[in-house]
Amino acid sequence: MTLAERSIAHKVLLVDDDAAVRDMMAATLEHKGFKVVSAANVTEALKHISAESFDVLLTDLHMPNPGDGFTVVTAMRHSQPDALTLLVSGYPDVQSAMAAILLEADEIIVKPFEVGKLADLIREKMLTRRPTPRLEKERVGAILQRCMTGVIEDWLVRAKQSRELNHVQLSDEERTGHLPRLVEDLVVRLSRPCAAAKGQRCCLFRRSHSPWQAAI
Image (cartoon, rainbow, N blue to C red; front, side):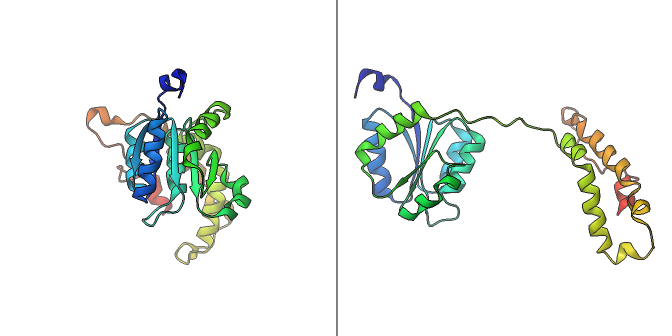
């Protein structure tokens, strides 16, 4: 290992339910200069992802306990989008589905593979991968306002299927006429900062005369 490689101690989260395989890969990567944090299952992996930062995720796909490698990859993608994600699978035919799977994982490593070459593969991928584009976050109120038409149309379809709401004969316009105002009211409420700093609960329905009660 070169001096340059030693100076870059990339942090790897290694997830595998097989203790022998996990220990062997961890020892190999640590020998190559990586800092390795190991997890024996999905639950442990998710705890590490929420508490620590990683440069690389290396996870087995198939694990016996609840969750699988896709769960771990998805969590890492959302929490740490810049981390390199490598998925290990024991099924060669997974290569045929690689185009779809690569939307989440950067690379699929099919078993068996040479553990000794794992460090070189990780470094190569870290040098050549493109940064994951960051998605701009949108406020709930803005999403609701943008989707208002669809929300009202969906409510109308559900209302027509309800016997309780069809006792009174109304046209579509009469039945939905009040909804835009209610949605706008909710958008305004969602746009207001929560009064948590004053020890109050931020609740949309605390008023007894809430218009949403009238809609029901």
